[in-house]
Figure (cartoon, rainbow, N blue to C red):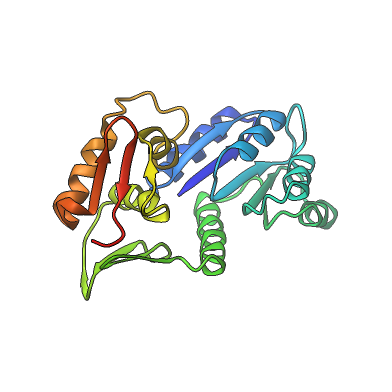
Length: 220
């Protein structure tokens, strides 16, 4: 799953990004409200961690603008302020949850997971592609009655292909969703994970469309 952190305290932002990446999420970070609004509007994110006191545009306005545009991404707001009025204002603009600094990292992760589970239940997270059953909530894959063990990254790559089964998904799209928009490593890393998935799921499960990307075959 792909998360966006909008936080102007760069040390905190780096720390949160490192921790959430270790939890298995792809994490993007920006430090300005206007940039955060642009990134959240243009990117396909599963959750937004949004500070309130931001340069350019504060978190309330970012949240309000996203909701006004019909963007229903779950939003967890962060603030150094404390008090019922601030919390009410944040929730009134459409935020899903609220966390006051300083906070425990364990609590933040629990809130993130709770919001993602809530979104998952709403979105009916079980995908069926041919003989495969992919449970986005439990992060498990079954072929018939047998579970197929996958690593976190393998599951994330498979999930992106399964969500668009039958369509061509480019290597760039996979990189942006499974890693992040600032990934500067070897783009051929995608081929490594596709090869691993073929070994575990069957070579015919994922087709290479030369020069375009990969297609998950629904009937296999």
